[in-house]
Each structure stands twice: as C-alpha cells, then as structure tokens.
Image 1 (tube, chains in turn green, red):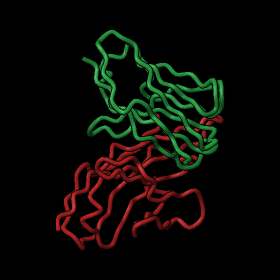
Image 2 (cartoon, rainbow over the protein chains, first blue to last red):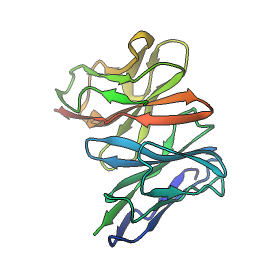
Image 3 (cartoon, rainbow over the protein chains, first blue to last red):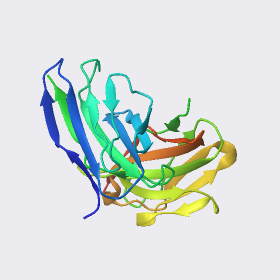
Image 4 (tube, helix red, strand yellow):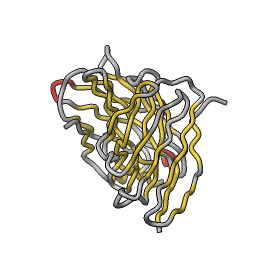
Length: 112
Length: 115
C-alpha cells in the first residue's frame, strides 16, 4: 500500500525535552512538508523540502529542525526552544512540489 | 508574505441548501490552487485542484470551484449540501517563486450541515 506513515500517533514528552516525529513515504515523491494544525489557525507550514539534502523554512520554523537524508524520510525534531509545542503535526508529500499534497494521519504531541 | 484567507470560519446550513466558501490569496504570480476537506477523525483529502485552463473546476462529491484571477479568489461551491458534507474545508495555494514552491493553507472553514 502506497502512502505516508507518521509515527507515533500520540506522543507525550516532558517540557524541556527534544522529540523527533517520524514521517516516511513510499510514493516516490520528491517534495515533503511538515505542518502544524491548531484549532482556528488551519495548517501552518513549518519546513518543506523539494529534494534530498535540501529543505527550506516555512512560516513558523523557530524551535523546529528537520533533515532530508533520504527521499522517503523527513523527520521533524521539536526542540526545547519551541515555546508552545503541544499541537497536531501533519506530514505531507507531493510530486515535484507543485502538485497536490498527500497527507499522513498526523501525530498529536502533548508536552507536559 | 504569501497568505491565504478564508472568509468564514464557521458555517451552518440545512440539508439541500447551497454552499459557497470564500478563499482569497495574497498576491498574484503563477499559482496552483486547491481545496481540501477533513472529515471528523480522518486525514486531509483533496476535493479539487486548479492548475490552468477552464477556471471552473469540478471535484469529487459534487463540489466545484471558480478561479477569478483578477480577484485572487478561488471560491468553493456546492448546489445542495448533505449531512455527510459536515467537515472542515481548507483552501491552499502553491506559489512558484525562485525554484521553491510553498504550499500555504488558509485557516479553514468548519461546515455543519443539519438534517
């Protein structure tokens, strides 16, 4: 089955700890994205990558970091510098970065 | 900065009513346009898309959208809604700039359809 897998579905961390969210796709898509979804604010772009070993900051990149060492993987690290990390995180991918994006099921991160 | 505005945050309709959800984006240039839907407890799905050609595009489940370039708008319409259309709807835009294409979403519109 082709698709985007985000794991885990729910994640709990203590304040001050870094945490890495996984995103894997087997669609052979070049572009991958990370969004944060908060009620009433829609999806806000954190980072995106159009090719391996290259990524760009989105609108709310502060406190986050990413890597793109493999085409199929785009992990997101939420660092302790992110002031309000509790949120629903969505990963997406698309062909070439100009077509429609396909989304994973999301990871709900709760920092306590 | 590029942005996408959705005018209505919450819409409540009765079944069989007509629906129009507004979407405007911040400025021109070459864009690709999308509407996505998120049903309760499900992941985001594509409703329809516009890349070029006929500005009136048809999507799944009877939805359509009209691109008006002069107004930077891409409004979503459905002639007669059903209870099963209850969901959150997101407008999204890709701007082509300098080789990096950002996919930006609006804040979403929550639609509740009452039987």
